[in-house]
Length: 525
Image 1: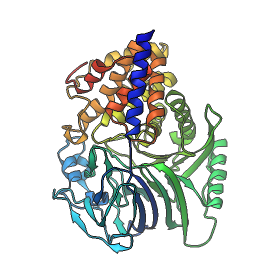
Image 2: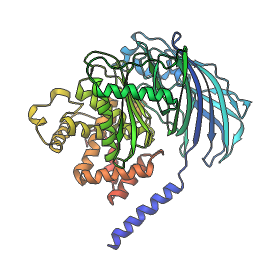
Image 3: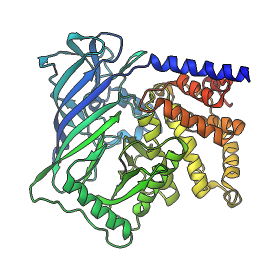
Image 4: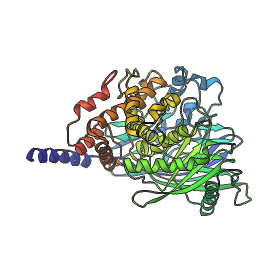
């Protein structure tokens, strides 16, 4: 009894000490932007209030200007795609994109920028602060900008009348206890972004429907979205209710606000069908749910609102309650290397031809990134498995419980397997997954994978297998409690692998050195 108590006190003391030393920077964005649908461009300006919560004095701030990744064939993005056999066909034909018109001021004084020393990193610049930013102080940073959107081939761009506006505004890199994390935009490799609040005004032609991170503040427009969306949920067959502008003016300005999120994205289309419903979580909290999709005959998106609601409910029960006021999924164009891309409160689904089980699984996965990306803001570039892999473990559970399917095997599973209880079904799925050759270690930074196939195998599948090994040893209930403890401790923060390990050890009351050593293991576990 005394030994057990000592271990608990030791873990608790270590956790408190770690949390006492923890800090992260604080940002607030005010952004105004206007879409030019003919030029496929954005004109905008932003103001950032940047508070330095670190113990260091800052002489500069690294900025991501990621639209420049699409500018020419020499960028890190283009080089990565060219060198990946599974992705290089993306570049058969495309329209380039870029950002320009930047003119930074800091506290009202002009500020200069410097290029990154790596010539391939034209999507990173260093903002030199006119005066050092001391610990605890804040600065007001402003700049205009113009973005030429690329044709859609990697997250952001335009296609078939739809605008996917992602990674679009000048954005400070993360500065944490390990220093600056400035890195180029990549197709295979995601992000690490600082938590911030956003107040964004988006000016578009009046006939566009817009879905974005955050809550729509235009009361009339929001009420119309909800009214149309509710009708389309109540009657899913036949001609759907269509959006018509409230006003006859040529343009409208929509305002979205969001608190404590690491990114902001938005999507616009004149032909979106809207679905709307609410989701009641276990605590009684009610959130708004929307889906936006294209008006195609026999589309599997007719029931997309149900998939969104199921995903939020399941993940909230397994990991921790969804903290945001709204959840959304948007149908985008087909992507030859992914089924979707996640952003806080909204996800783009790029699987237009998906069957019901597949679409449901993709939506669950992308909505699930509200936990493993947004509410748990790990460094997705350096520790891909903490985002994709942990999420995939829960996606596999979701698919097994609901359909007895698995997104890796598709329709290749025999009927006898699908007739099993969900736990036995998953046991056999994981036995088969462990037979797939996966040589690279989980703890591999995204840019170091040889290609997208290896990236997918390791970041998604090998990690899901790794979590299942722990479930097989301690039981699902204890694994869920470990994840819930991790979520409670690190929600809205930037956990690293050591933080996940400590949280799991605190919850399980045991040392997990051998288990976490596996994240560096080559080959099978």
